[in-house]
Length: 309
Image 1 (cartoon, rainbow, N blue to C red):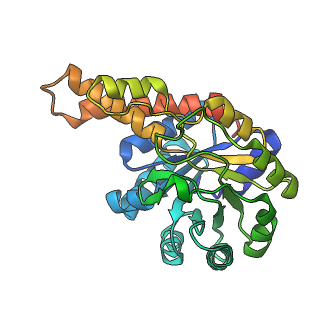
Image 2: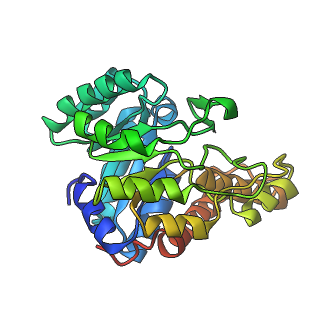
Image 3: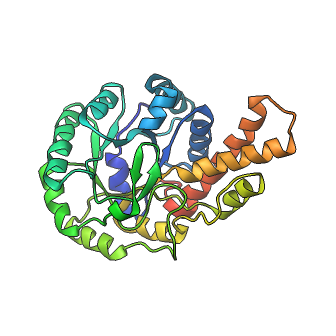
């Protein structure tokens, strides 16, 4: 099965009241853990690559690993650029085999965001690639994305129709209270479902995306801290809130921090229990298994996309 776009995935997800997991990948073990979980749960899948991942692993290596995963599992997999900052980055990924790209023009004024997004859409659509845009600014830090809390802003539902109609984007990332990284909330977690409901009314049937949607699972935070980490007070988006969003217009939920936590916690534990070991296969094997366990949990309990192929 060749790589696919997210267009049909999102149509089915919207109609079925579930969401597709978009999991960030950086190396072989992460890709294996994610795709093995999706294979066992018979779930469609988006593997997304950030600018930082492309710098770290190189575009060609990640593409070959993903192609191997497609051949190994037979899954319908979409390869997506996460937070493309300009036209050239998006063009490079499109020309390099990605089937989906995000152009993040949210830092620009509204008109410039439209112009930039439209430029990417025109290039991508001519080559059969789908495009995700963004309105609103999420707080937090993740790879090259760094937005302070004071600069964050919720998506204005009044702008979404104009933005989608003038750009031709295939999906839209919105800001309703999620944030990048592991430290998402100072008080009680709260998502603006009223904004999501209003957007759904204005754009019926149109796929919405949530970034910064890791739940920062407490047991992994506890493991990190138990074995020498420094993560007091880390908290994420409650899984029941994400499930509610997935039952509405949200068709794609991005997950990165939870993967990092699961992998880091497991490796820290391994070294604490085996201080003399220096074989990467020994500590990466349980880390890969932790990724797999985490992804299965997300597919079934949060996204609801298990059994949807």
